Image 1 (tube, one colour):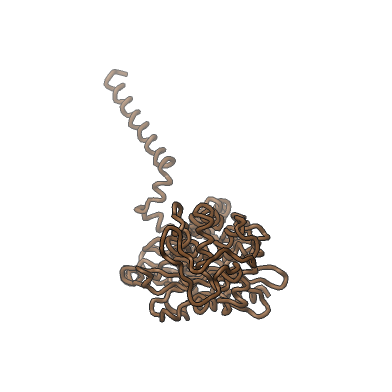
Image 2: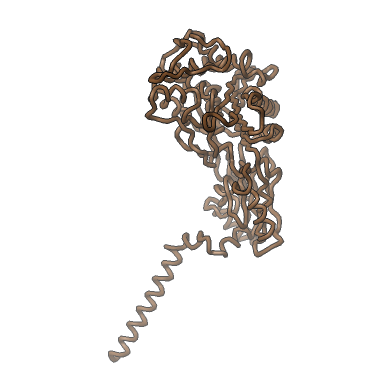
Length: 492
């Protein structure tokens, strides 16, 4: 071979080698990146080429799929009682992506999850169309309905979270106002886009797409006194519910000339912790927080889950108890004001830990993932998260919370034949506390056999209510009671 031909042959060989390298680079190194590229329309078309699997509650699907009437996406998502379940399911939209369980478990629901490889291979061999798997939730349909209907009837805005204390299963997760994910599930540029635009906060101040149960933090007000009482018991400041506290009246916050006020003429001077929780004495719990100090209060709050995001698997905002506070700021934070802020999920966790004799279980809402033929793919096992209280101290706190419902501010949560423990809260907010306060109630139910099937947190924000009519016992406790009753009836 002469020199010119040899050069041409080498050049052609290099071109072939470059082509092979490029081909392998695309197929193996960049395959995932190209497959998930939002501009790769074939991937999106494939995603909607088959019906999605379902999200299941109490054995029944709360989702479905129908054939699309517009565009080249074959199927679109449908929802049963969409507004009631939206905080759980989220949405799956051909035009606007997805959220919450629809997004987190998208691989299972579309059938593309690697854990479904065997099922996909079998379907390929048999010529069967690919099918999505199912997401089986821990939710209780009766409890969810009671929570949503209660919020809707109350009006305004709010949220409810119910947990099973012994496992951490989420039994209800409601937020109001809400939205119907079916209204923008398709890809129609006129209808779906119009419905989506209407729901955005800039066009709808009620912000119906905000999941208030997980993504909104509120000042917890007096419900946080349960955490402060736990800190007092765990640090040995007081050893029983009926020991008189060192709580003078008036009490001036350390480093200030400001008296911490109580609401109304209530017996707070040197009150026992039981009486202080029953009447919600700010001075007693504010002084406990100041005496314990920021570090001890922060450590106890963290044991309950504060200052950490929670994943259920849907993400919940971190609740807040600040560090580096002076004694007066710690006092205010210890009664659920100043910088203290909590999600409804967080406050349900507080009630749940007390009900479960001091053991806090990690909250979760997905019980099982299934293949299209309902074979189990993954199962969630209950997991202990922390021990905020010893069993002895938890039982002391239970007796205090039960007094609140029997004789104190939580009487509206009483259930015949059931022991209920609870704590009301009326949380101030706004500039100089000018806005209507938030009404809180946290609670648990205990049956005759000693088991506690449910713990609940309810928060109501009503901008149009008469300020004097707003109280946790008046607005939030009746909703919590109906949720607890729904769970108890479902187990009978």
